[in-house]
Length: 101
Image 1 (tube, rainbow, N blue to C red):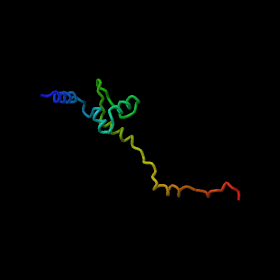
Image 2 (cartoon, rainbow, N blue to C red):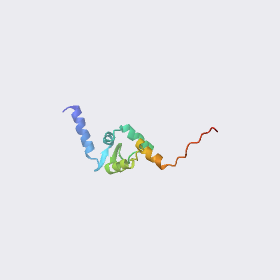
Image 3 (cartoon, rainbow, N blue to C red):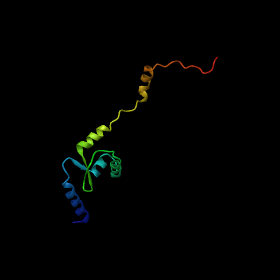
Image 4 (cartoon, rainbow, N blue to C red):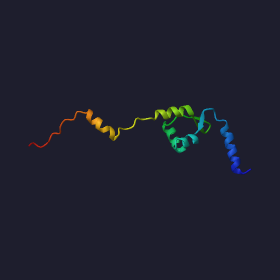
């Protein structure tokens, strides 16, 4: 058996005892298209999804991650198409000339 294959099997054995519903940090980072370093920075700043730490390993509960993602939703900024309606609803007084005629 090659050393690489032995390392992969050992890793699977270590991950096999992850509590149900919890996802390792590396998988969450890949899913969110972030680096694990970004998640570490967020944890240090008290930001990001809730996590648990077992020994030196970090896990994220799937349900907590989904809740956190929903909390990140924001309404889009008004588009240029909305501008005519917004201006029509505003009372715009005629522009006054600063020069006396």
